[in-house]
Image (cartoon, rainbow, N blue to C red; front, side, top):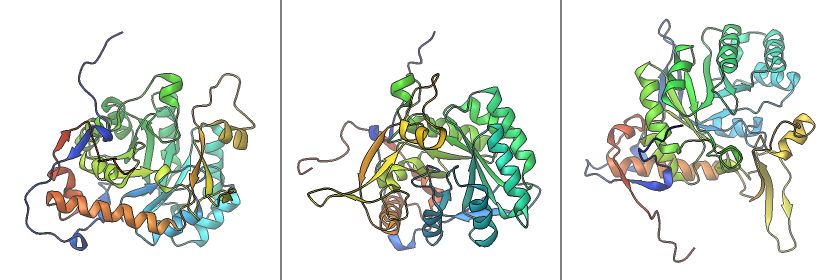
Length: 349
């Protein structure tokens, strides 16, 4: 046993310090980034690097289509069947900003093989997200290698989750383009409560981004964002991509029915993928050796996801103008954080 005495920080613990800069209008800030990931080719991915999480309420075909129109990205959830995925990737032209998601079980890998065999061209799947709750096992690392070998050489591979520089480096060295960072910070995740394990998200992003960038990889911050300012902080801390779940829940394009109570309040169900709800829906229940590490909540119905995304993107552009970053990719170079105990004046909350 040992204790790390360095202070580790979350998004709520800091603010970005404004800086004097040349006048920049919000409309002139460029949020689009291009990512090169294969030194042998000129292949790039170009997008506003905000990704809808591969939860079965938010990682939907409908969300993917809506976010594509805004030049943003989506990681599809793992539970579409082979025919649904084959039809979507074969017929749709929206490939470059959509991730096929899978776990690392034999069934997950067999399903991927089947989908690839049914596609007219396996390069139809441009991006793949390998997603597990715990990315610290040798089994996970070995499976990442196996999955990578199945894919077209130009496939953009994201994998996680981890939260320390050492595992970030391990994944990049094993061919992962984007390392997904975040343990227990999600709005409907109970991993920190049930296991006592995790890492404050801001510090995880800062430390893991340094490790990934040093080896030519990229980092996706996954979890912990509750407001647009947190998205700006994640990018300011060095994240190349930011994945959002709870912030994109409750919209028309999300799975689930709209429920209206006696007072006219409309809600939609949102739950973690390790929750009892998800386990019963997809696995027949929580296994005897497991604990449900997610919760189920009702979130306010929020209409079209486009409106929420425009609010997030507007806040991100404004953050860039506060520090003089004309492009999103410059935000981390312009960011200085100050520790704080108060984020906002809540007198009228």
